[in-house]
Amino acid sequence: MAAEISKNTFLLYSPCLLLLSLSAAVSVPLQLQTLLPRPLPSPPTLSYSWTDSESESDSLAQLNTVSANTTLEMHLELHHIDALSSEQTPERLFDLRLQRDALRAETIYSLVSKAVARNPPRAGSRSGFSSSIISGLAQGSGEYFTRLGVGTPPRYLYMVLDTGSDVVWVQCSPCKNCYSQTDPIFDPTKSRSFSGIPCGSPLCRSLDSSRCNQRRMCLYQVSYGDGSVTFGDFSTETLTFRRTRVGRVALGCGHDNEGLFVGAAGLLGLGRGRLSFSTQAGRQFNRKFSYCLVDRSASSKPSSMIFGDAAIPRTAVFTPMLTNPKLDTFYYVELLGISVGGARVRGVTPSLFKMDQAGNGGVIIDSGTSVTRFTRPAYIAMRDAFRIGASYLKRAPDFSLFDTCFDLSGKTSVKVPTVVLHFRGADVSLPATNYLIPVDSSGTFCFAFAGTMSGLSIIGNIQQQSFRVAFDSAGSRIGFAPRGCA
Image (tube, rainbow, N blue to C red):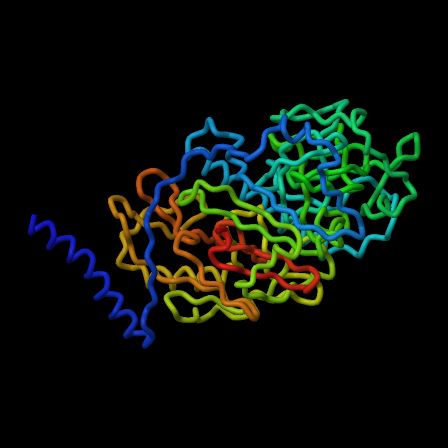
């Protein structure tokens, strides 16, 4: 027993000796934090504090109706998309997540490059019929969803939420082509608040390109990066979030939806564009919303989203919200540098993250991308600094897009170098679980960043976990509050 204790003591302190020598070499003490290695989480389960029957039986008199002159707050529970595929193993779910992530990232890069290359579209153009708003990946265009009511009386459906999309849409009957979803297909003829949008209306003209049916009513189409598409009637409808009702939301009533996510009924776009829910309902909620995404390996509580003044936490640090002159969908921020182990990484300069006047480059915050991707020179410099700081950990083979992995099998606690993202006006120190993540059930953990040949960097949802990320469009700022899920 004494020999075993001695061995463990040596394993615990010998890395510290190495770290002291490394810190002496760079003349800055290496800053560490503790990681408690947890395995891949089991598939999440859905748990709501209300049932469909209770929600759908609520009388409209009990609901808070949000009008243009009303300011309310709204709280939602969010669930990870894996909850709709609970029959899969943790390894399979993680593999599918990385596949979705790669497709989404490539779609974002393609969307931005095409937007930068083209001239601004002429308002109300009829020269074709495909919206230039490409909403992301084939499998739902986002990683988190909630349950909300569509129509009057409300029919409760699973809807994916996505800060990288604008157009709100839901599958509608009659279906020419509809993918499989958990809930019954929404029937607009059974809703008292459903209304088509005339072709000449400002809402129809808000589409980058539009088309009319024989009755001179507006049609919409959103094309996805893999060739998937949703097409149907552009309309207005009432959306109900628990006891808060938001009227006349412009949404697509899709009768032809191909290749999209199987399970959820549609998409609630939360981007910065004119047709997103956050923009349409912005005045009612003071143009503020926030979310907090929990680490599913460490917590069984659901993630959450708040609309209104309560969305902005007092403990948040803020960075200015930037705008791309060629594309209004994404939330851009200014990243100045990165620290690893308490020292600024040499070679990671503000110029690597700067957006030029043409709209190239920059950094976006995205809820639907999982893994943060930095432009390759910045990623290599950060990765190499982390490898040096964590050189006492046993390396493991590369895994998928991750090229810095470690074998932590049998360990209950390890010390790892700290990682801090330095935004303009806001230093965001990441918990260890936000950048060293399990990739299998054998104790392999990988540095959860990747490089990209694109000039555009993306801050993904793994790095956002446990922070309340606040989008204050009224103040043109984005905030980060640590431990914001409490």
